[in-house]
Length: 89
Image (cartoon, rainbow, N blue to C red; front, side, top):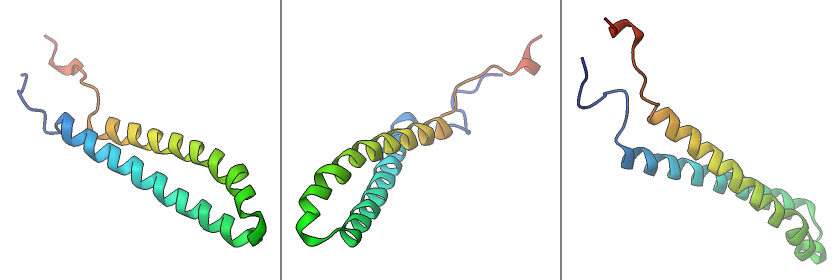
């Protein structure tokens, strides 16, 4: 029997918002950790160099991690539709 609304799946708009928020929060938390670690282990006159060499490339990596987390959250909240083999007659 086909239902109009599957209770195991969130509406698309809500799932996208939650996924984007989760990916963004993950990226921000990791970015703050990188900034904190860089600032605490770098001498003051080398901070601009550390920013160019460490923080900018890691920002790209952290963005990719955020996108991956967002994708995994979305797939968890909106699993693909599958047909139950038990319902075939």
